[in-house]
Amino acid sequence: MDAGSLRWELEVGMRAVREAAAVCRAVQAGITREVVEKKDRSPVTLADWGSQALACRTILEAFPDDPIVAEEDAASLREPGSEALLARLEAIVAGVRPGACASEICDWIDCGASPAPQARFWTLDPIDGTKGFLRREQYAIALALLVDGRAELAVLGCPGLATDPSRPDEVGALFAAVRGCGAFCLPLWRQDAATTPVRASRTAQPAGARFCEPVEAGHSSHDDAARIATLCGIACEPLRMDSQAKYAAVARGHADIYLRLPKAEGYCEKIWDHAAGMLVVEESGGCVTDVAGKPLDLSCGRELTANRGIVATNGLLHDRILGAIRELGIG
Image 1: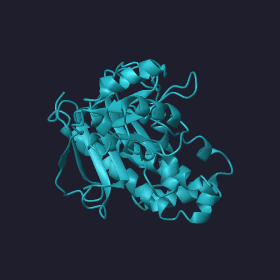
Image 2 (image 1 turned 45 degrees about the vertical axis):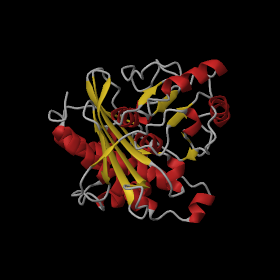
Image 3 (image 1 turned 180 degrees about the horizontal axis):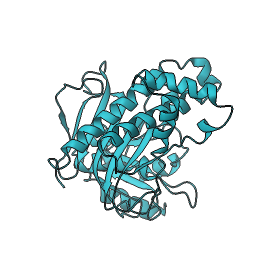
Image 4 (image 1 turned 90 degrees about the vertical axis):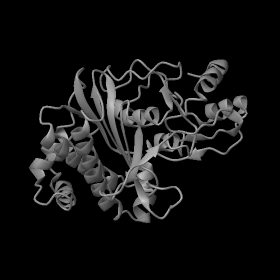
């Protein structure tokens, strides 16, 4: 496939992510310090549902025969006693898509409950990085088109990242990639803006490299990452952020390495957590594999059952990082 054959898919994918991001922004505006301190997850739950509903609707309007594999479903919204929550969701979604009604919204959400087929389908994470979302820091809306087990197109909305690193006041970046055609970035909130090519760093020596890792060590081992850094002579403080925004940081050279090192035996990564970010990094000149150096196999269903862990780098450092992982017996 090429950019020309996927031009309509790219346009629709970018529109889907922008609408989803608008819902997330509307919900996030109402999050108070009290909500965060009480660890109230209702705002992120509403944003997850609203984001998925609008992204799925936008895709299915253009491609009604394309399955969508996403994180959420509307089962709990359809249960008795959920009327007040559903009414809140309806008001939020209608703020972006006027006229949207509760029953339609539930149907749109459930469009993402498809099992992963082997041919052509979309995969969506409506909010990746829920803790970052609640803290008003980094989160992402991640969308990818998969064909025959390969990510062919990716759109990654990062509302907390600056479009231009030299202008940190303009926050909200949209990253996109088409296989074989490179990656680019443009403002998330301005549809008429020019695109900027995205390229991974040319850092070739580990001593000058920088890790990007999660804020919290819930899904990846900070201790193992520190051991790898010590072995490779990496002295820079890691760049810590939530979500697939880490892939964006590697893709545009703000970091050189992103590791998601296994913590629990038997844990499998979900395809929606990595498909979009992976393609953006690869099309920026970087490399993404598992900890054994195997390419990510997106053909196994909703989970990456053929892989363990994630290693994303600028490409030049990939073999050295894999070598350190082997030497330390990690993964």
